[in-house]
Image 1 (cartoon, rainbow, N blue to C red):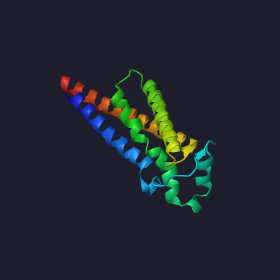
Image 2: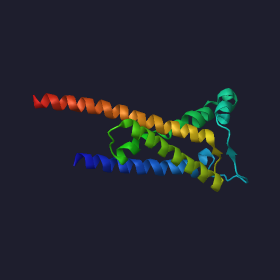
Image 3: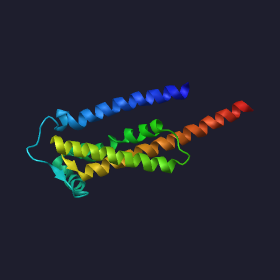
Image 4: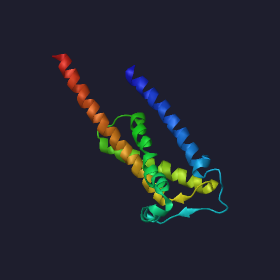
Length: 162
């Protein structure tokens, strides 16, 4: 019963996260999504925009730097954190880390293609890279916390058995 409730809660939280994420990626006027470009916008050179934000953060501003570099990682961390709990446990966490990271890459690619097609954003391989890093960090945090939880829970169960 407890596991079922946790899985249900994870599903609800994941759906809320996805709705909010899709809103910010496609509809939020605050992030320039209310404006459609006339032509397709894209960057196919890896680290081009990342380098630009790092080298010119004094010109683009700390907010733009944070949103475009750190924000792209942070926004996909919940994806990496929620998905392992939804797809179930595996004996080898490395398998799950790889699978969730690849799923993060595929989802990010879908978003980037969607932004390109709808012309509400720019297809950017740097975003693809940063989002995938975010999914990876999220799944690693999930496994670290799960290992800590498992160790504490097992220790408590051993004490109760004595």
